[in-house]
Length: 260
Image 1: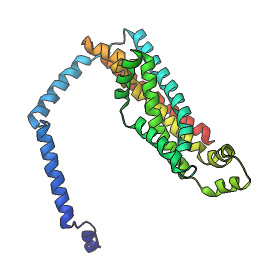
Image 2: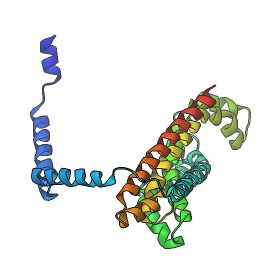
Image 3: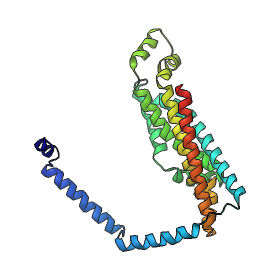
Image 4: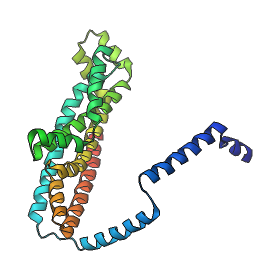
């Protein structure tokens, strides 16, 4: 038993060389990024003093807090709805087991393009295009939703059983009937799970895009940082955590409801 275990974890000379190269690269990257123990210890001390200035949290301006959280919640739900609505046809058009490469590759390229950039980067572009406010955040989160949910929808459709598809096609059904009676029954519950997860993700992302002026509680958080109002910052952070926890509970509840 011990001999087998030793052979199972024995590394070849090429593997050892690879690990050594990885270790050398990590050391070089840390030195190039000025990552050292003295700076880390100084950062811990500064962080402790910063946290001390945040205590206790200040909820006196609860009206601004509720307004920012409500706007973030609205942005997340609207963007998730639009993202899923756009991703469904894109996922069908990108599935290689349903359509030829002439159709699937352009659509897959569009989905990849939507997934290539972080929502904050897209939000910066949207703020420049449509101005400050929730509209820029909704557009940015919708683009991110299309990139993520579109990919998951496509993969789910490509993993379905083709026997049911062939049976529906044998009746002379149109493409839409094939989708309705052959594809959707196999992937509906996975689509619901993906949509619930994306809504939860957009709740988190809506707090980030506001930092660049795209509305939501992120804008309130950034303004508090600029005023050095750290006790209010901590109140906002606690509220964001509560909002994300509520979103997580909502996601679990939605999955339970549709599984019954």
